Image (cartoon, rainbow, N blue to C red; front, side, top):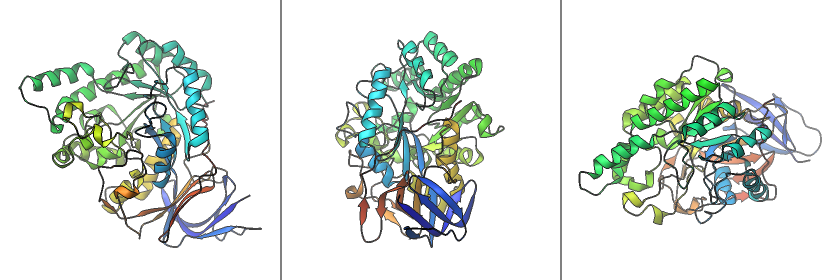
Length: 451
């Protein structure tokens, strides 16, 4: 059994940062304390000047497999995730074919078992005509992260706007429901109004077409359904100040049935950045005016926004370097999410303890993940070593997502992700001298404790 002993490292966990020794034995955390002693062979890691964080759990990614692997695969995107300190992910159903059946869902789990370097789960997809099949996922409540409903701005037939089907799913689902909330009717009205001006649309029009009202109205509808049936609802990628009035921090997280997420790119970019980045930051829902970013940061810090993730959505540059209306919406971010949040720690926007809460602890709590998301004895050793004294720069040659680009190119982060452990396996080791990978052991299927 491989053992690792972190000596005198700063452990960021459950609201505090303390110096400790941490012993990893096999897949699990065995001992956390001061002056931990070990019998037998052990690999000792000097933690002086370093921080140990629980691995990021990204509950919102689009890894593109099956069917769209020219943009990304489970292998390539999980590798990018691990290099960024993400040890577990939950992947969305808008692949080709969409994940509309139990068979297709299990096929994705099989693909991941063979290739994913991180731990994994997959959402069951929903459409206007697969409610009965989607509800069969209730039988896998401890084996599947949730069901996904695209209530706006989707591709193919993933848009679910039939009120009968929506009511059935909210009424009968025994799993968490994750929603993409945008109002198609309002979006179309905004689009037609701008088109009537008789000019070519540009990226800066995106937050006008996809404005705060259409996000608010769709989120409100989802919340009304969840309250009607007592559903467990997690609304993804909140982007506007207006939506925040729908959420509260009055209850402890474990008692909340309705929770909210912000994505890192909405905490970093604003509509001012369309002038320089154009379609590179076109995403759905849209990056909006600066006052919304300010409000999102306040909500993240106050616990009105419960979690932070990426909505990682790689597209080829050839799909971005086209006129606005033809450009695909989505931003690749999974490799840089934790680094970006550490940037904002240094900038004073948030504490490192709250970063860990929003990106690890709270997602484990919201999804009821078993034995992950915290640095606790007996839990899986999903760990990240961060060196805040070693800056890192985003270059095209160190981008691991298959799409090969990032809107963050040439951005300098104040810290480096030095090591990433997945189930006690040192997968990524990024020292000053070299970067080493151990891909011999694959990640595990995430399990949930929902009994």
